[in-house]
Length: 509
View 1 (cartoon, rainbow, N blue to C red):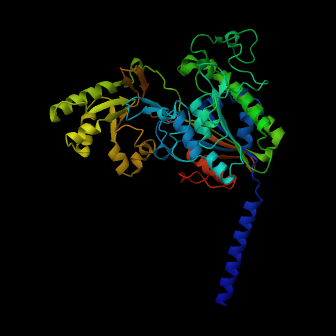
View 2: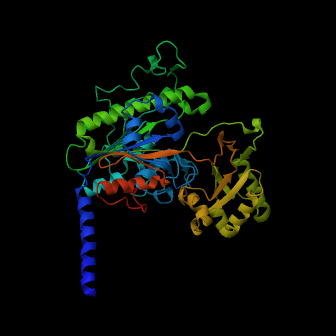
View 3: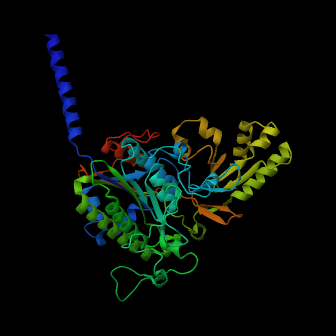
């Protein structure tokens, strides 16, 4: 009798598994995945302008998509480069190595841009991205047959979205206003993408261009022209740039026949939703409002045209934010809010004087950048100074300085494993980060008098969503907190391939 019950139970379990497998097999796979990263998108602004949106853009995504409203990054202080790399690799800078747009090259002690490598003759590429992306895995799985393209206003966003194996990465050249790419993606040949006659280039007629608010014919709250040496850089941060991204995306889908067969293709797009010309939000509120309204139109056009061409159930849209905002220049002292200025260059100088008094003259701190100090490791070896002793003395010295909240050493981040420093370690990389990381009190300014850099320290989170819309997605509002490193494995599961090779995050569903 007992064996009979065991047999029935086994049949039930096998039947349940068979049903689940059948449902998984029956779930359609998208022909095209469109990964949209919106630079500096914020939920508060997204909601504030909601009554003014059309029916095909943000409203469609929010009403018909699966919306994870409490999204964040599993690292502290992401920027555009580290955020996009985290989205596409499904892991953090500790593994993918892109800690920011720039860091200090330890050999030259000069700033290193995230998509440049001095050994590559000035050819921009994903050299510092040390793991695979979801686009790379799509290429590997399809044996190169899948199409992978990335389009963005900025070179770092395009290249890091595209990954290593993509067919192309396109961005707007800051000097010429032309859509361009790297020789990395074109077999050593320089290519300008002005061949699409139907596309409007920012370079054509920009001196006559006027940016004024949508829907206002007589009274303009603002008017901007684009002239001077930085006109294209300003244009990149205007509300007009996103229409170009959509135009180019639709042209590529049509010309390259993306989404036209059973092999899933990937299109990575970056839009811009930050303040105009990186001004404080309080100085460009009307421009920011217009940027969101134009962005809504651009996304609406993209969705409508792609659904019409390929089919609603044949496309999976994934939308999220880079999760940061340009630093504000708030004068807290004016309102008697605790504030001050921490000078990173002065801290480095004082440390060199302090260690000189202990161990003899020398440049113990070789250089500094942002909130990080880089030590002279050769000098410590020559003087036979213990790293542990050096780090401990540095930490004790810095914690006595006004405005310093905490100090982390490379040894501490590499050796300790607790939740308190997990997000700090996630944004750290041994080769690209400093040896000492200084956390400045919120509300304090971090200033480098040598370079003129001045950043306001903010510990507050930037609210933003992750939205999935399209193939097999049922409308749902999910309040559970999620992180952006779950996006890559979610796409991988949707198209039934393996996740990127450093991804250890679970899919969103």
